Length: 337
Image (cartoon, rainbow, N blue to C red):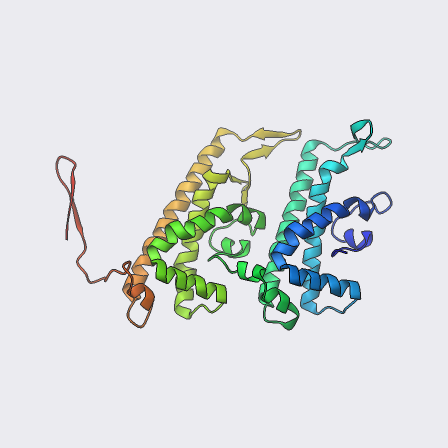
């Protein structure tokens, strides 16, 4: 039946006119949100278990109620985002017309855009909070269906798995929408930039510990002080030119347009310079973190500590002679050991 069962329940999250707006109007969009966003996030088994408890009137635990509240907020707000374009139109045998009633005035497009952006942010951030709660209670018996699901495994797939975790190292305002937009880049940076520094064996060791939630104290230090901040900065540095992220002063947005009172207009040229500077700063900071990561591992690795890295080709003894690089007068570069 779905997580939201009545118009009164829906109005707890999105205020609509209870006399002229029926739940039936938005139910198709709510079903799509639950299929496309909720089930993949929490896993089909837990989703159907929760739906069954609601149908049977089973008393939920405190954490279950908190998760349900967040999931309902996501369903209500994201469904409204999907409904908005159709809600402004009326389709009849005569074609498509703009909905108008009496002396009610149609909103400006910038108002619709603002509403859509607000609802979308609320919905995705609710999903982020629900995921955090599920992870906090992953060992509780009422969340067993979640804990054993492929969705739970996927939520620990990367070195940075949440928008909140990402924001600890590079501020994206805790936006799950921004995090999801950058996820393909993050995945690529793990393999292209982090793995070559760690070596394949040590890289896979860290990945396995993160996935199993059994990270050792030494490896947690490496992750928190070097790997995760480097990855966050690398991801932003690569994602900005790849997907056109913009800046609103507090966080990163998913476009390079600004809104005026009538419609959208292209951002001024100064934004291009600002984005270029942002990329340069992010990549520069990332390189610093990577250099410090290598220095820390080389200084501390041994047969008993960071042993996997110690046995790899990436390990360089801090006491070994370093390469000396000299530049000849003709510009040629020569190296000696």
